[in-house]
Image (cartoon, rainbow, N blue to C red; front, side, top):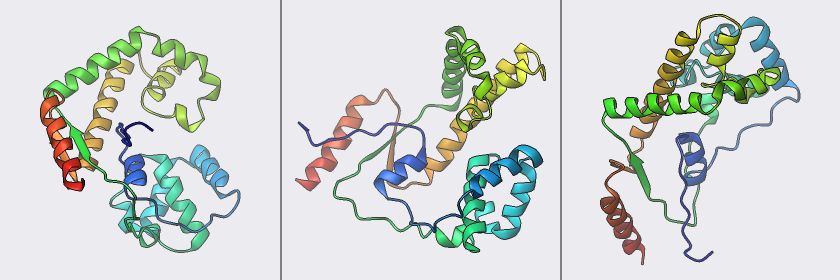
Length: 214
């Protein structure tokens, strides 16, 4: 209210694109189809759904994370409802926005980044991640609990591997998420990249762009 400036911070490119570019208007889905797809996922596994997606929409299959069940379910939800390819419906037209967007990317050297990710996971475990996962074990089939950080612990509780392996997988899978996020953001030519320590340079960059609009 006071400065007419908003800061959006996060690692999800999809959310940032939704704000800065807008979403495509997609066809309405058949009621109950998502529930049916989730049942197929639970009973038949992700591989079968991935095969269907690759057959019906190879273009989208070649660009989406095929290990992300929610992306696969969403695409098949649209494909089965409309009879059209999900990729054909995603026009990716940038919607007019009544504000200036200045995109700042923060990155570190790979070794430094991975060390910090590993340390962050150690801190999360020390401050109760295992206990938190146990608390919600009855809800483990919810989408929010199928994510990195929970699923590895639930597999450990199922005795699929020991604790050391659980910790190794937690760190490895978190690093992989960071790598995918960087891959996504590097495709965005509007992002200017800085090291997190370059505070002055970042402020100067923002001031420069704000000045062009005044």
